[in-house]
Image 1 (cartoon, rainbow, N blue to C red):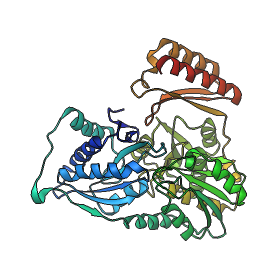
Image 2: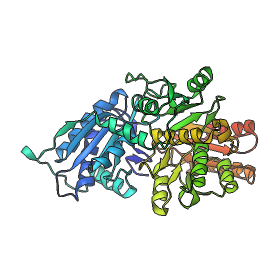
Image 3: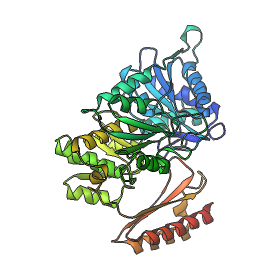
Image 4: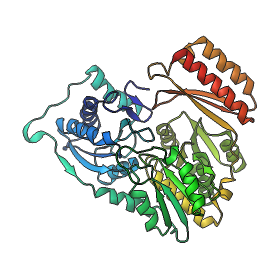
Length: 449
């Protein structure tokens, strides 16, 4: 992991850990690195989520872009996958999103896409970091007519809505769907797309005010969606996160259907249609053991990567696969978009639900979710990668691994986007898992917090 970039761009508390000065530097260095091979004046598309700090950081980033002679197109509030799509559609040299995804409002982030709409490789991120932190290259400072200009095209987001609708092979007439937009970037795009496809929709948490993004809503807080599905006797509920690059679902009984289950449902559907390339789904090491058992039972190969949808994507591109994602709901359909896309994922899941004639609970039964507990140990970013250097913590982890060997697994890892060490244990006894995970998390905090 880089010095500035984590698993999903540069992220931190806006105005302190992620100050305007850094946004300006990222605009300069990012525009220079991503467009330096071009012979024309480069253009970069910029969008943001709904948190208060997003406009502030957007202005600083755009200033940096223009200061090295690149043009910026600002599309305003837009889902992360919309910026990826628009970058490709308009043949821009890069795209940038100002968002901290599912994180609370005080956080924000900056993530880049290359001209093909893909997140950046480690090598490109390292090159940008070296310019900012090490002054590895002297950047141009054009003057006069050579500086960049800014164009404002808020209407471009409507084109992403039309794109998402075009993915559907059926209409959703007769379906009642509850949407939770997390008071985020999907508050306008997702309801319009799903309604236009014929569904009856009930929408909650789609009134962003700059302060309420992800606040007890969206894919990180599903209780309101579960209640709304039951109260409205809906067929399905769909929850997006703040930047709408992920989604989770709720079945007609009020049960959460996570990213593993959604990939299992859609992977099996694609395989039956002969559209699952190499009969393979790419997942991460955090996926539930039940997902891998599902793969064996349905003759679907499951490839694993480290945590981060960017690493899932890298594996998919290297091997020619078209479906992959994470338990958290980052799902990539490479036949449709080049990054995790909550709206595209929703459309694909709804198509399976409509064409199968089954309920979502019936579809989700393709996979048996084994008990899994995740406890977060809050540690500073400076210390979160050094937990294995402490002998007491190391010994405690080894004891746990021996205890669950053959009946489950233990996975400890630092978060790529937050100041946390994540303790995940799978096994047979939920209560025992919770006790053991809590005990280890408390030890990590005690020793390193």
